[in-house]
Image (cartoon, rainbow, N blue to C red; front, side, top):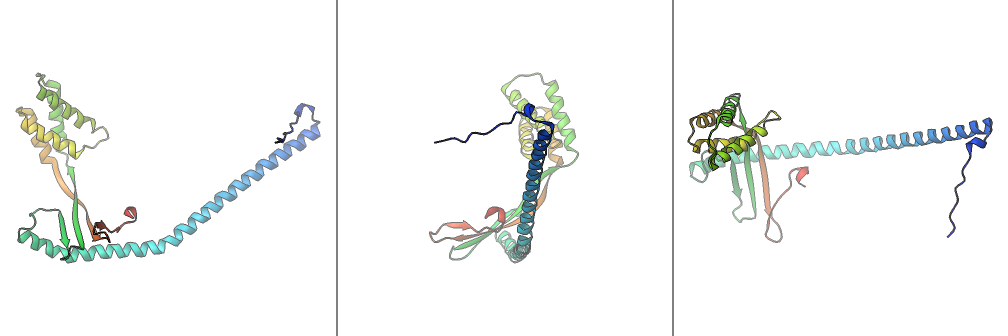
Length: 223
């Protein structure tokens, strides 16, 4: 198979006129490439705009339908949640409720989602824990475990926030550890913690042709 040989030009052998012609040819080539890339970018922007614009009317309609469906579900099922609680079928502060069709072919789950937050009182408790860390004298296994828990708690605070899981781990360990300073720290941290509702979610399940209960996607992220 013959290979095509690329010709090269020795610019030192060119006359000034030939060099200027070559330079002009090169600049025209660069300009053409820039124009082509600009055309490609503009074509991409147009395609993106068309795709997103065409989706929006349908997306907004679907979104509104899902929101209305969710509100209807909650409105219809909230009285049943109260009845479940009154009949002892659910705990007073239960955050998840399940409702089933009599034949077992479908069910709806309502979840009241919460997150643990804390107020400014957290700083006093963390400071007491830090003080114990500096002053501790014993080196027992229990003390080493407590040290690890506090160091993990303090390490997670570098971004300015504390992990709820680490806070509760500290509270539970400190309450079991017979040291007054740590018990004070645990009490201070516990007083600063509170629950805040983040959302109410509706999950719908239906049995498929194989008798398996499958969740129906009500969100584009779960499709």
